[in-house]
Image (cartoon, rainbow, N blue to C red; front, top):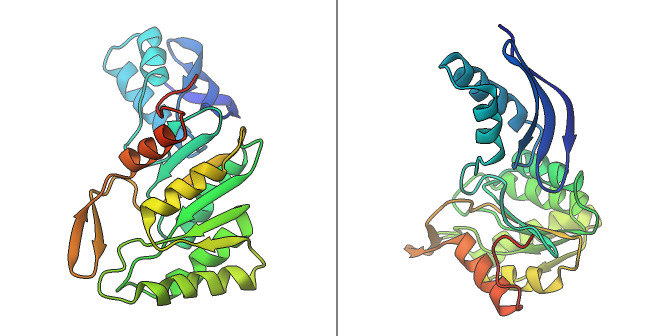
Length: 231
């Protein structure tokens, strides 16, 4: 039997579509961002139905699915949306920004860096994509390791300048996140890209404890927003 989705609608909260199955059809809601998640949802639904779960249970499961930590993870919805994503190449960053742009009423603000001891061309890609698709970018650290952080930031900024993008350089990642959150207004989206679920931040030869979500929530609390799910 075939399981397929129809009438996909992307919103700030996630994806809505009609789920068709040999056991009937129903309106499905998936609290995840990005059209590519539809395929995963359909595969999971087909497996669950084949296993004997009812259509009702499957729809319930989709609606309460929390997603993978650090992959288009929504930390806050209102008054502005805060999203954490692992995107750390030009291509993955472009996908993330395009997905968010489709469901953002206001501005799209980006916090991003580029890793040290990795292909330097990646920096140009990230800088260009950021300038083209975000309304403002905060370039910051992202595991610069033993490379000179300033040189990495300058490479990102140079690529962004060439594309005519608006940016600011804030070397300290926590400070960059706090600044982006403080500039966000109702209807905006803030994307924190590059770290995702990672639990360390590599500075020099040190691997410092890091938790992107905790830092974002701390910044929101400092702004009096309390962080978390604001309905």
